[in-house]
Length: 494
Image 1 (spheres, rainbow, N blue to C red):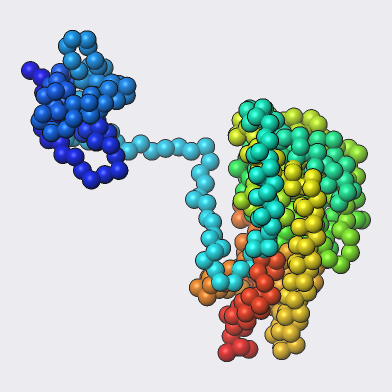
Image 2: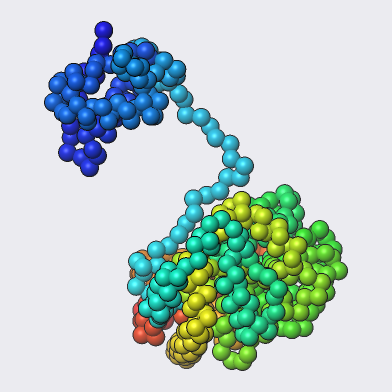
């Protein structure tokens, strides 16, 4: 005898009525109210019962046929599909059908922690550009012109390494601005993807990767996720200690060295030419690949910045990574890699597995923006702005020193942040600062707890904070520092 669900009422919903009816029928099948092989009443009968249009019923039934819940037999009507793995007893359906399964992950990782910087009144994030000063109208115009005459063939698959227009502009810019001549590039979704790709090319489970003791956490997490064992290398006021690096090379089969030589992250120290040459020779001798992360090369204020290590790489062992996140904004997701051809081949192959290519319109828009010269004009304006804020923060910190606060800092040659020794434990400063609407980073964030050779000090010995100066105006910076100093030095500023 044909049957239909016992009850169906239309609801005030954004969903069409036929979708609501299909949902009701689907749930009845899942619950065993309509068992396998059951013939449903005719569309006309169901329309009369439910007081809806017959075509609405037909649409619902046809949807369920398309999904595989129902079968349509010519001149016979609609039937619940017999092959469904659904129990035919309502009583059975009242019992739990499945137990929650325990899942085994290849590597267990914690939920990513992100910060909505918009919720903070004062922002001292170390790599935050001033987005308010970005020339959005210029860039909008570049995107508009690209869309007006876009080559549709570039919107297909292909160009894994990046569109030629952008690669040509970046290559030309690197030669002019960094004395870096490169034959080819790989455009990535920011420097983080580049780091992960580079790690996946070289690292197998258990391989050793050397890093400065204080370093960039996302890079080390990428290496660790690829199976690497991290080795801390001591650092001092001149950067990575060559003697300790050589000692670790003798004790461990290190495969890769990760460096931020221009503005060391987070201490802002610039690695001297002598140490760069010594490190390069050791890496060549021991067969170590160098990842050079040059994340904010442009922002150097005291003198011309040193050219990248990749600019003098006769052995082809340097993987040079940089990004537009500091020149534009992080959401642009434009990073790039320069390396030996054989390395880029392996990175392109892995990129194709991950996401195939970057957003084409953004690449073409950035390329057009660069070709018009507007990119470098923006860069000059930004460098001038950040230099002003760089001096302003240094002046404020000196004023606090003159007031008797025991903080110490060395004014860096460039970058977007300052590394400040507060001379007191800063373990609880970040939490208290966040409550006051102040975002900053403290020393404990920059160590890697799982290092196979750890130089991490006791938490009570952590005294440094990293203060970004680029992302907010001078007035905001001064007001934020006033509140921050009250938190760090309540005995001085009660």
